[in-house]
Length: 123
Image 1: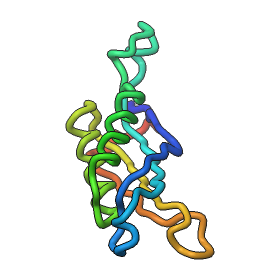
Image 2: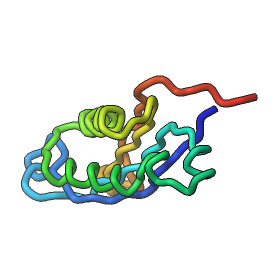
Image 3: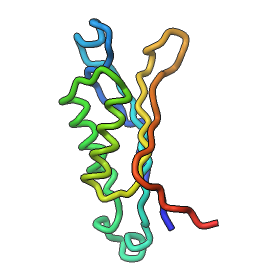
């Protein structure tokens, strides 16, 4: 059994993009994250140490975005996913990175990736 711990609509300011003007100043980047985790032990004992600490994940993601300068949202999504898998004890994650207003007449553009092995959900 696996549950999903998630973060929706996390916003950060960072350098991202291939155009010269995108490299000059930080722009808004929006992130959604899903992480597999069996939350039963945490629920039984009301114990944060037995689940994914979404606050710690959010802080790490924000720090990475503020300190990095990627050309592609694909690269940023991959770096975030790798960090979550390596540093936060999950086997699977889905990361969605978008740039609001990056393309005229659209709300946002971006990429959604999955990394790791997603545990099966019960039928």
